[in-house]
Image 1 (cartoon, helix red, strand yellow):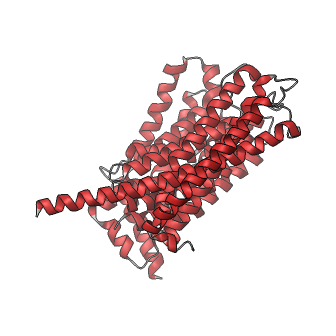
Image 2 (image 1 turned 120 degrees about the horizontal axis):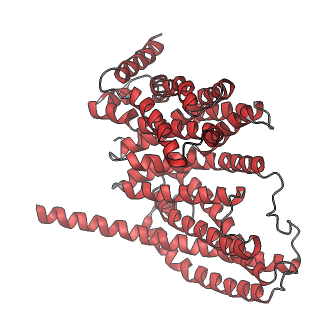
Image 3 (image 1 turned 180 degrees about the vertical axis):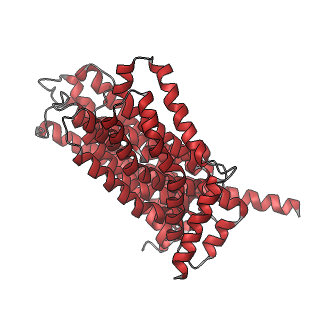
Length: 225
Length: 243
């Protein structure tokens, strides 16, 4: 199974780079924390209001944090030449993109989910609400990573894409934001059921699992000559 | 004459030169008829004369979506068949589509002020058109970010197709989002049952705006081809001078 070995090696390599010095995976969590800490300064230290806005604040923070770390998904590989090796290797580029997305999500998306309970305390969310938000983030952040990967692939082909990436990717992530916040609010306040928006959120993640790697691979193949 | 014959830009240019005057004439005649009919259409018993904004607003809104469809077909042409004119068509269509979307938003907002008492409301339909407008602007920004036109075309084609898949999802989710917050929307005007007195001018205007789009699109494609030729000539001249 040389193909599986190659993909596993790619995931291991990406994780190792992300977690070592200069990798920057944990900076995403720090950014998430900072955004959440900034919110009370903007809306005032009213705990009741913060509780009401809690899920929205956590989701916006996670969205921005995952966008911030996506910028480097392909750029670093392009700079040191390993992206060219991936393009030339016999492993399909779509699978390589999916593997890179998985590694990125493990290094940058999962820590956001893990950090959510701590940040929930700051926003005065009770245990049930916090776990609901964490669950929706667990289901929704893969979609953010996978759609953001398309933008990252576009950005690497044009050498200076940072801000453009945000402009292109943010409108595409609106459905994830809508259903993520809706599911969290449904779990906290009702009267809607938690199941419907949560299933749609999972469906969005699955759809972007199908579209994301193919679109990113197409961008890389056509964009890098 | 098939689509492959048109791959030759010179042939396309000569065809455009023959077609454009006729298209422009047909557009202006239909626009005049449509505007006259809209002006003489009876006032609505509830909305008064403001109902006439509809004759401008609705065709713009239809075209804002149609142009993305045209761009998606062009994107397939770029990625699948490598048709040389598909790049040009996609690049020319983006600003035109953005303009139609912008006009739909502006006329809708002007219509909303007397009817709903507000210029903007986070209504599901308004919101999804606004997102469509943002995506048009992002696409134009992408076109302008890459210098090499064929490379920009392929990047923009991928984004256009991703957008074409995503737009129905966004529309659906925004509908869902809004119905969650406002169970009984106040902003229901009339209903789909339009009287003939309104329907006929509206259809004439819709055909006129579609013709306007075709005319503008062909003219913009012609300009883009000529612009690329000028650029190629300038590059040639510069390299000769350097040698």
